[in-house]
Length: 150
Image (cartoon, rainbow, N blue to C red):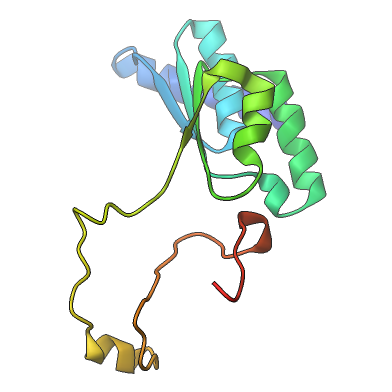
């Protein structure tokens, strides 16, 4: 039942946007929206670009199966898949072929130079004598090749 609800919801959102002005492209995040909006895109003849941040198989085998079934149902016109250390880029490359571009998250060390250590922040966070600190907005989990020793 959920796939039907998602497709109908996607059509509703597209119809609302089209009432304002016909969009040139649909951009989605997440496997579910990439697939459901791809169906809508095919109906209304509009390209769909999906952005996928890793793989739901990182969280459970059931999520991974659901993701694979969805990916086999339909594919966006193009997909950007984040190489987060999981198998996601290879999985989607295998399923969608040339429609996939792999993108990397990284820090441009020429644009972002190391700043002097902010002792106040380190003290507030109870971090002492740190030479290198990493801020991550993603899950530091094994499937993403994170190791506690890193």
